[in-house]
Image (cartoon, rainbow, N blue to C red; front, side, top):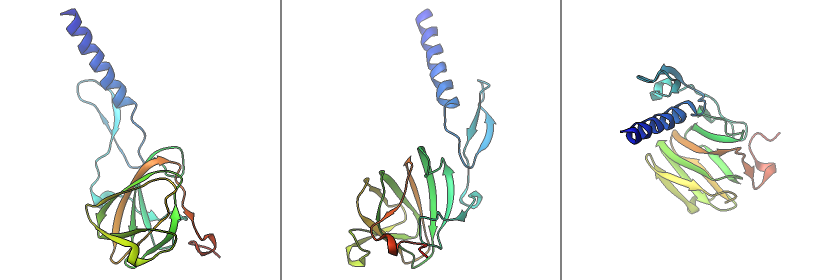
Length: 170
């Protein structure tokens, strides 16, 4: 009986540690966990409740983003949604970290190589997932409004292969 009580106490301690150790979220709701009296942040958002803002300066103008967790430009885990208009193009680039992407809505076209070439791309409809290993050269574009969700462990940067042709160059 004592061993069972100790095991139950250990499991409760692990659960409390997991709950209280979760990372802060950009969009959150404060609740009290039932039965254990521990405060934590629970994320429950519908698509309409996301807070969209101008996309990151590292991307061409026209993108919007909703930060769900963390900050992609700082150390630690991040989750961000990016919304692109139709006919949006992201020139060939790489990232210093692995990034995993899920297509939420629309179709994201993605290809590998040193230049944006539609013939080298693959159409990824909603529900598709792709993973970009660190430092791999790739590019993307849309043919309709498209929303993707990226997650990884930052910091994330966008390193354009042709810096003079990168976005927001003056």
